[in-house]
View (cartoon, helix red, strand yellow):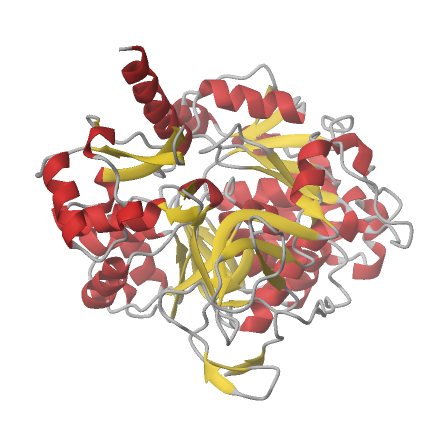
Length: 569
């Protein structure tokens, strides 16, 4: 298979299918076209066809319409499951903005989500509340109780809307599909749409995703129906999700990667998803993959490590597409995945602010704008921009666009770029200028347009006028010590003489800082990049976020506190 890839200096967003006027429009069309096809299954035993899923979503929407009448945003506290899909669909039909809440964040951060979104209602389940051990002043709506409360009238109304009302006439009955009930962007502290923009449901906020908060306080990312649908359309055009796909859905919906790729994309494209509530339960995920003959696995490199250790190749024998994102794939992970599970992954790049996919490798040939046909995958890169997306690399000092091969700040432009940050207009204005989104990541494009991400801007230091990569220094330390990647972290602190200096935070190293520095001096690494052995800080373990990623903000605090203690001492 080949697809026409547009060069990064061209920009022609793909036209959406005519029935994709909103997320619920796209799903309803599929449910009408393929009512008996299997839509979602989960490890709890649920199996719903498109028709059954549509009926359940409409029934829940009708039941909650009065309760949620005065709420703009509604929380969902559920792991990946059929119930979570029903809840998201019901809110979409009602025209509500769904906020899938991070249940791994802890009570304090959870409370901030509820407060920032002004949540009055949260859809959840009794088992979920017990497992997550979270409390809230918002009214809890238990999805299992709502199903029990559905009377014959509610079911009859849903049945009528699902089966008898023509697709073109359903919109007036459901706020989420009516162009007469557009959501004012000012309610979210967002800039108004341009004067030339005709307001449609595509412009309406569909969901709020909170950033991880590893380097700063979590920000609410407001994504529109058009943001998500345009990203799905580009993914489809690029060949990431194919006809007849059976997707393994393990990433929580509070991640944009999980929400777009394992909920909305399969349902808007008429494919099947198999959900499991714990992405690190490798044994059960392997069983589900084998039982349902899954064809597409979408997860993060951290998650794939668990599957490499605990699953067998026979369980993933039907996987034809393994898409990894959310963090950098280490070369050794790639080799282990190929050896242990006989699966070759493709790596992509995205952010919550880009709905999320910006670029991705593809397991087939692609045709460039100049007519050249090339392999769609280049190991070590995060692939080509998805169709309709522009990528620009900018010099950190001069803000000038850089040529191929030169690293700089990555900027992205395309229909998937968010509406903005929730009630943070200044942050939105800083992040998006003339449609270009500043990702905060450093990387470069090669001559063919493949993107390589070398790290966050916060993972670089300017020492004596030269940009130094913290990740590259950490990699060199791991080489000379033979330690796992999770045991070494490099950051920087202010320095009077050279602007900044490197600090190494580590645990479980077999060599002393003096020995490590001596080994580094024998390597090919530049002298400027070698930290002083006095600036090594040992900790029992590197602090991590609930999602398994390193807590960069905490690590920075450790470095600054140590330097301050030395200064005072």
